[in-house]
Length: 377
Image (tube, rainbow, N blue to C red; front, side, top):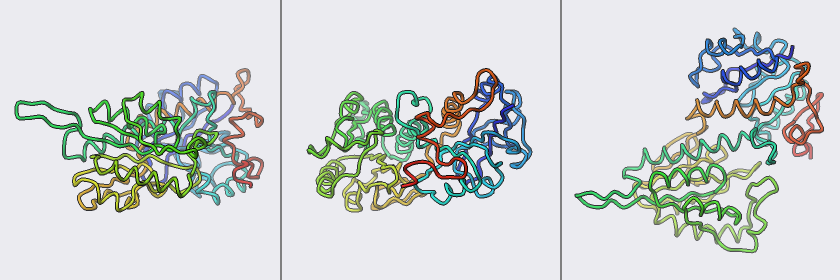
C-alpha cells in the first residue's frame, strides 16, 4: 500500500501544515496509508486527534513518520535532518525555492529523492488547482491590507458625520500579480481610493475592473514585459528610472503602499527608495510583501516593523503563515490535486509520469540526478 507521510515543520516561523483532515480523508479514499507526525497541525489549530479521526496514523517521531514512505509532503524545504531521514527512492513535495537553495537540491539528489518544487508549478490551465504561489499570494495580499489598516492611525473609508467628513485613505499597490490584485480588491472593500502600478500592460484591465487607477509609464518595452509563465520581466535602467519618477510623484499623495513585486530567481526589484519614503506623509504605512527576497522598499528590514521619519515599514516574513489555518487548508488542497493524478485508480499504487508537463515543470531531482532544466544550465 502506498504510504503518504506528513511532516511537522521544523523551520522557524512556519505554522502551516501540508495536510488537513479533509485532504487526509481524500487520500484514504484513494486507498493510501497516511501517517502524520505528532504535532504537525498545532500551528494551524489541527489536533492529532482530528487527523486520527480522518483516518491517519500518528507518527511519534520524524523517523517513525517517514519510515517506508513513498511520498512525503511538507510546506518548507526540508532541514538536513529531514533529508537524511527520508528513505532513498522516496518522493517529496514542498515549497523548495530552488534558485535560493541550490546546495539543498544537490542534497536531494545525493539522497536519491524525487523532489518536487510546488513553487515551480507551470502556469497552465490544468495546474491552476495546484498553484501554491497563487493560493498563498491571495492570502498575503489580503493580509497586507489588513495589517496596514491596523497600523494606520486613521480610517480607510470616507465617513460623513455630524462632526465633519473624514476623507478616504489613498492606497497604492506596487505589482499587480495575484497578491497585488487581492490587495486592490481588499482595499477597495474597505473604502480606500486605490491606485496600482505594474510593468505589464496586460494587467491594466484587471486593475481597472477592480476599481483602481492604473499608473504606468507607456513604453515600447512594456509590450514584452511578461514572461511565458505570467511573471514580470526585469526592465531596462531607463525604464526603471522613468517608472521610479512616476511612482515617486504618486507616492507623495498616498497613505498606504503595498509592495508585491517579485522576479523569479532574482532579488526583489527596488521600487520605493529611501528618498521616496521620506517624501511620504507622516503616519503613512508601507507593507513590503517582497521582504523575503530583499524587499521592494530600500529601507525594509526583513522580519521587522520599522519607522523612518514617521513612515512605518512592515517587513513581515511568511505573511500567508499569519493566516495559518486558511493557508494550510489551501496549500493542502494544492498538494492533494497535485498528487491525485499520480495514484493508479485500480491498484492505489504511486505512478509518476515523468513525461507529464506538470511533473517536468516541478521535478527537480530523479534517480540521483538534478534534472530540472532551469537548474542544470
